[in-house]
Structures are given as C-alpha cells and as structure tokens.
Length: 186
Image 1 (cartoon, one colour):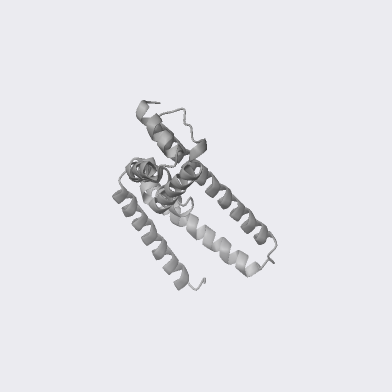
Image 2 (image 1 turned 120 degrees about the horizontal axis):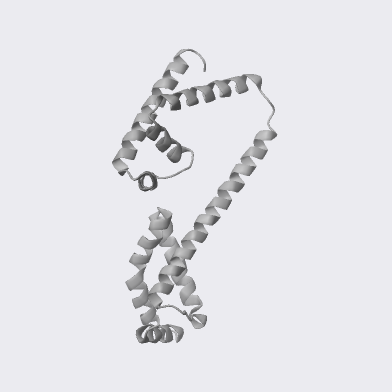
C-alpha cells in the first residue's frame, strides 16, 4: 500500500466525509462498469456498488486493506458481484424445485398430456429444421436466460448476428405454430 492510500485510509477512518466523497466520486463509475461486465445488468451493478460504499463508510473504522486501495475496491466489487450471481443461481434452483414439486402434485389430465406431448414433438421438429447456430442461440436465450450480449461473447459473434438468428428462430416457430393451430390441434 502506498502513502497516498494510507493517507486516504486514515482520513476516512477518522470520519472525513469529504475524503470519502472524493473516493466515491473517483471510483463509482468505473466500479459500476466493472460490476456490469460480470452481471450484464447496469441497474444491479449500480445498486451493488452503492451498497458496497454504504457498508464501506459504515465499517470505516475497521477498514484496513492489505492491498492498494484501488485493488481492494475492484476486488471487493468483483466478490460482491460473484456472490450476487451465486445467490441468483440458488434462487433459480429453488424456484425450479418448487415448480417441479407442484407439478408432481397436479392431477393427471390425459388430453393435456397428449397436447403437451404433441407440442413437445412440434418444438423438437422445429429445432431440427433450424441451422445449428440458430437453434443454439435460441436455447441459450430462452431456456438458459442469457442476454444477446452474453451469447455473442460466448459464440464469438456480433450482437447483430445473435439478433438476426433469434429473428429467424422466432419466425420459424410462429409459422410452425400457426400451421399447428390451423390443423385444429389446439
């Protein structure tokens, strides 16, 4: 830790609100962008950074980083963002568990099962008609909940390509479902 960081630390620990405000002003924007890279959600990133600075000020007397102040701030925001993502995964898993449990308790309706089976077969057949990348992009977006930007990064393609492939997939699904409903299946 350098002397400037030690000076800032001592001033903030002593309750110097102006020094804290300078630190907040200097790092708020960059830390929000850092968190957004992990979360792909700027609103949540801003909330996370604000909450961090609130806790930082509240616990300022016990604050004693071993790293540089810059490294400490970025490392803390990264950890908070990863913790938030982990929390979301747990919530999603719990929601799926509750949904599956409630499905097990529902009475069986033979006609509904037949219709669901038909729709499942129709969806699978529609996926087989699509190009592989188009199908993969649709599944990543609709089944895994990924945003276009995330998909583009993972597949090393542009966001516009993701948008175009999603448009093709949706158009094919609309056409297939329109034909299915016209046949009187629904």
